[in-house]
Length: 267
Image (cartoon, rainbow, N blue to C red; front, side, top):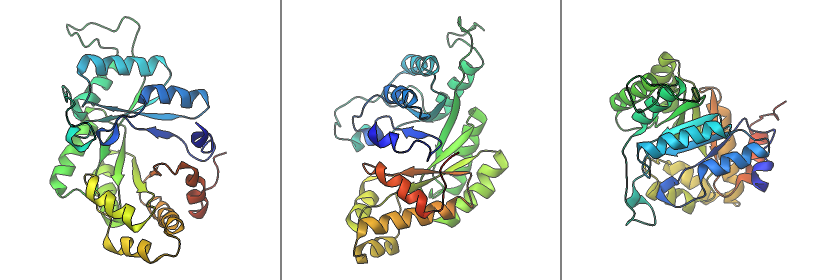
């Protein structure tokens, strides 16, 4: 919570992952509630990998009861990508069906069917979806984003983006016509070795060689990574509606990145 407290007044919300890369982490919902207690708005990630539909419905009701305002609906990384490959996957829902479930609960509909209403009234969550502007299949990306929007997504949070023209095309040709605000993914790279590792293990990561070379040639790779992230924040805010800044285990550097990008504190 110390790292999160340093972000108060500098960011609009803090994203809380849910077993990212199929690696154990603290309950996303619990951490979201702790953030709210410290005056920080969270984005509650919810993945379909580890829960059946009943458990997902329970999580959504619980998030609403705890005052958590935003939910990012994700299918989830495959178990084989993590450090416990013997774990069992569920995938009763995937992201589109989870978005539809949020929409139904927001409308007060009981998932049991027969037109029943939720006994305590509708919930109120703002659902978002993930997108990869650098997807190898443009038509597939367009279809998936449209399906997610039709299912109820109110914003899109992208994977790490390193190609600003791909982001520009995604915002202009796909998200824009759908009226879908975009938070562009910016990842803080710590070194050339870190960048190569990300390319190797993170699905969809495409850090270009010239960026890796820039980090390798820098006298202080960590400081160079901060400068690269600040440059991307500045560029992407001219294209998308916001940025999703990922500084894994280096959250204390986020204010520095924002300062270099010319982003003032939130009034």
